[in-house]
Length: 132
Image 1 (tube, rainbow, N blue to C red):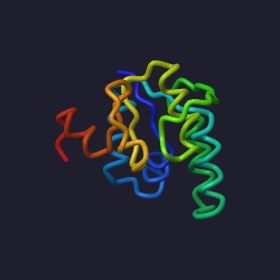
Image 2: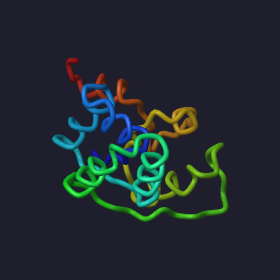
Image 3: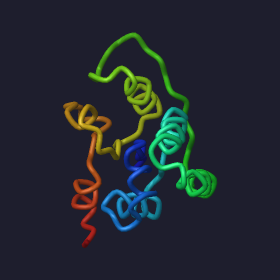
């Protein structure tokens, strides 16, 4: 399964290494194909600079060592999601034909799309049968 990992999952995994987002990310890396959008990486760096700058070096290590396919954000006029900042990421996920978006973002989670599906870390772990 190809899984786009959203910024909030990366952020939570960095700051809280025993959290469900961290467990979901580790499981996804071991069992699936990870996809990151260039916009997610930029957003992660920006958020960490503002909210948790001491984690920036850890983020750079994660970005350098995590096995993933990097895809570009795709601008498109059609609005499918409430938050305009999320639209290029959603477009990229659709164009890259990912199967799921691993996210905690309510705007993604409120979408009623069959492909890609939007899953929280907890939903993903449950669907994968991972015992916590």
